[in-house]
Image (tube, rainbow, N blue to C red):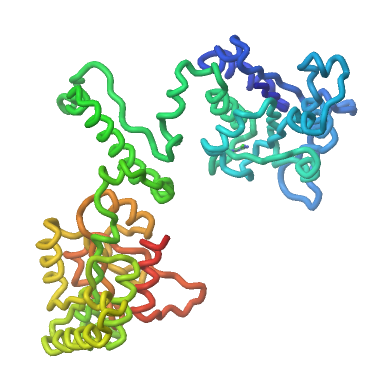
Length: 449
Ligand code: 6GU
């Protein structure tokens, strides 16, 4: 595979590719890397490659003519094959297959991924154009660039280091570059997960805080157990560090045995009528709203929850809730609504719900408050929905989501609450969703496919 780097700083490229895996791959002829300099394609006395931007503003823009000329030069067909050298006719398909792929390295490009790296490794020739200054004239991109890539959400002073990253990452997939074919497959990102932790000798490492031992399982000789442990570690650290990756991860059948049951199936919703606040901020008990029983039960069943709890200290209100749920249950017969209403439970307090869940699941729930206000439950850890899913999904404990009626949950619940979900923020400055709507939106954010 061939790489051509278009750069005004060729001295940055060469030394970085002289040693290590890429250096050996070049020596072995598995890849070739050369550089071409836009400065060699200028026609003025000063050999200038940049100019001031039209419309004003800071910095300089790379001029189109030298860049277009150098890219055309870099991308000219190589007399690589004997047929070409002999001037034999090529089919259009052959020409297209040999045409180099021209990539502009820019922080405004698409983010480079391991999946894209793997695809690039199948190409015969990649031209990497390194931007400098504030950018390149847009017409160069229109006329001579096939793809724009960035290596991350930060700004480098030029594309050279990014081009080196592309060469290193891509070269590893070129046949003959890495020793074992399997070593590119097993590692971080190939499977959409971060790599599991690795250990080597010594078994016990002296450390300032005592002794750090290698996890026992790794010396057990039980290969199936080791593989399972590694997989679980990979999934857990992906959840901690990269919830975005874990959200896209589709566990295989074997993974499901290593993971706790799906989060939705161990999640409970509680509709809290006390302690909640009224419009003045006073702690009050609200009265039951008929629709809330039925609508949130349907939402709970739709998202596969384990239970829906109506919380009120008023015994007659609990009786009413149970009566209404039962009426609908009987009325609906075998109909879909009946299944939803089977999820309905009543409790006198949030603590009673927590105790009931702890008893039925054998572990205390992670209690998550919701609020329309950003400043509710000061000091409690905030989570976005994906963050909460990543965190709670890997821990087998049940999850309890508290929905407040009235003007929202009262802060006196603070000792029971261990996470607060980010508020639902609509497009307008008016924010008064019904608790039924807010509950449905929260469930979709957490569990919607
Ligand atoms: Cl490709 N170029 C520059 N200049 N900065 C970057 C980048 C590329 N990727 C991330 N930051």
